Length: 319
Image (cartoon, rainbow, N blue to C red; front, top):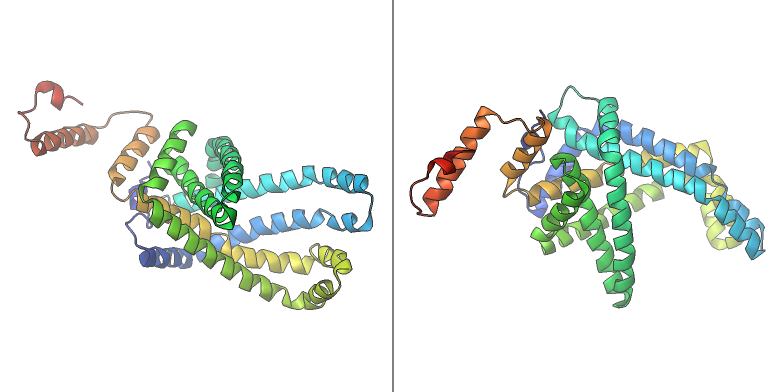
């Protein structure tokens, strides 16, 4: 049985302690997280580099351009699917590995794919549809409205994987629990997501600027002369760029999944026992344990006592 109550990120936070815990967890598990993220990023970057976008700049006929774009739908759909799969495995690794020392990336990945791939895919498709509607409505309130809609969607997405993977809920229950937890501390959650996303963007920008140093000539030639854009696109298929870009991505890729788990545990900080109870029920196939019977009896006694109600009956003591 996996006891998520012992997870090192399972605690109550403020913003400072949250960032500190993310950093401490990142340092402790850096080697494994970096290797996994690097391999995942290497595959995605390689697949992305195989898509030849420079063809678009070699034609002027709108029909030919549309035909080229249609031919790219399949490759990009495959890239998005792989990215989603790798992100799911990484998130489940961060959730499970610290409390299941006997597991490894292969067993965790296989379990994650079997149990969570399809439900999580459905949930993110629904989230994508909701995001389009929310952003369209936000556009009517100009830039601020669209920006708020994006942050709100990111906040909702941050809770989905932890709720599904920690609590083993169905799709419907995951949606309702996610919305409940996200709105439990709505404005603090919005603020935390905004701060973390900005921080992540700054780190990614700095790392991106560093890896572009060896390719500065091509980059500045493209800025000064936009018709040379195909040269910059061809650069993405070079082995040196693929490796450097994968290294940079591997440094930042684990940060958001760790943040998602911190956000989830903080929202659950007032009723962690409820979550663990649900997990035990799912892991044990619904079997009732002796300690659970005593726990239920004690809880019912305490509730009755606090309410100053009459003494418990036999029915009250029956689990």
